[in-house]
Length: 202
Image (cartoon, rainbow, N blue to C red):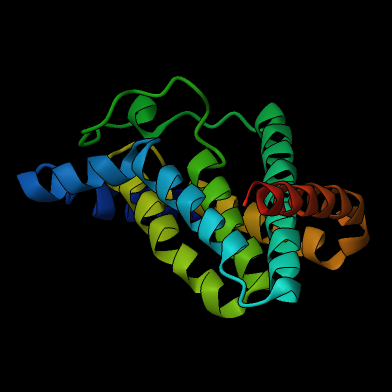
């Protein structure tokens, strides 16, 4: 069973990675989505929008709480990912196979995918707090994960594992809201002080 899963994982990888090198425009776009700049910056900007798009004071407070939970979910998912990496040492695709490599050669282990874990934690956490706005986080997460396979640096199974870790971590933090309450209180206090300071300056 395990061998079959690994073979299937590699087969899907060859389908996706086989697209690389055929079209210069597509390769350039995938390299842009694959790197650690555009998508993380976009997601960070979207978190700022999520924190500030409330229509009233109560909505502002809830959005700040959702932002706190999102960053807590990121911390949990990164900790789980590091725990998995400690015990599972899966080489990158290019280490064991010939691939259409159009990105730099990462030196860390392949499983699970760090970018997929992080970006999908943004998506799941945002969705659990704000179902309508949260779906805007999905396209960047999907694009980056697909690009990592396309460019030859991850297997589909690495991405899937990252998605599972992200979903579980975001759900855990969302369900156990009492864990985030002390941090939410601190953020609310800081936000109130900032509002007071700004009103005094006006």
